[in-house]
Image (cartoon, rainbow, N blue to C red):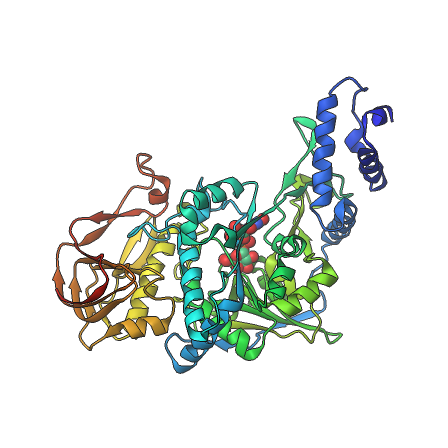
Length: 599
Ligand code: UGB
């Protein structure tokens, strides 16, 4: 009351709103005017931001929080009345006829797509201090995730333009969702690298705000224990991407520009672009409103399972069920063994990799109804079984893959499963946690993320007819991984399997296990090349270089390092190995022209 005189009319409204939604405790110990007046102003600035950045404002946030906290206290099962079953989707096998057909159809669609990267998470599980998109995807070339993503988008878009022979090449939009934890560093990474070749106007950063923390079951906002004028906040989850895209006006802009698809992906998956063209082809061919990319999932692996849920009242949806909910759901619905592998060695529920392709038109129609609000959940850690007090404050959270939950049954929701080695190798777990992953399950660590890139590229070249030696098994940071030849190529060289096939010919190409092959040039053609060592090959775009013959040298060795050796950079320590560049043959062609090189 006494402080009202200090407030602007807007602040008075905010104060009244807080009182009406049961937040009177926030003002409880406020001293008289004249004391802490600046801090009181910062309090209102923060509340105004919390209010404006949540769809429906704090009124809506507190209302939902009360409902969800009551459900949580009552132990209500979010899947009450729903029975899980295994859905059917499109299964892709790299290089077969169907894959090639979808890939071709998908490439054509890239000119009509916008790409959205969710990169607001700090990756606490990884224990890395930088932003995750700045991490090297592999340490043979040191290319970071963001560079790889941007170059893949640019090259795919160019391939798409060439195939469709459109009038002019579109600058396909690229959005990055950041948060206060990642925004400045993401911008700085882009700016200091000239946006990795993308036009700065093509890239939009949308920053998600944190949400207010809740102190108790009455959804009273939690204040900072050290400063009563600050409300505690925590991340709201990647589901924010939908409301941010909607409120930014970008979706409408894209629709008006004739775009048809929005493609969502996560921060550290070095393989994802290998399956994007084919998955986009599936979306276009099957006219899916929602297409989730999935991989075979090991039971209890820490990724959600794509599940068909059927309700007794006839409702049906195909949706991701998070890994911590899948096992209890199965047990509660007549599957006493819960989440277990079937005869294939994998869970029958495909693993969600949170790579979603949405059709823009139906997406906008749906968001016009919901404003982009995604079904939220709350996960309080209670002090004891009475569930009356929390160990620490909690908040509402939402996930981007829950978007289909509000869709009508008429929506065409599908999914596409790829080979396990092709499309998914995220970097999420720190070495200690990764080493505890049950044998046979993916580690999702920096070690496995990098070695999976070599495996995938080796398998792709094998499919294209190159003889690639089998891998050897090695242990780094307590994780047993397959070490394939270190084969890496720039997206300029190939963004599809069809590109690889076109650039590899002859019956007699081979690569030994100890070898490294780095292809940087756009028009490098491999014909009858036998490699036992390291070959790095680069060329300007308008040079065509046909490479064959035999290369033998000591090459680059993959060497174990001690993860606790603090003299090494963090990005090396989290892998447990480094590349020792002993010897190599480097070929570079800086003048346009046709070259045939017999090494
Ligand atoms: N992210 C944000 O942008 N903002 C946030 O507030 C939080 C995250 P995590 P998670 O791929 O294996 C998801 O933390 O949420 C970004 C799926 O839910 O790495 O535990 C963040 O930067 C799960 O079903 O993953 O699990 C990152 O890019 C499964 O698919 C992305 O969101 C799992 O990912 C994911 O954040 C997986």
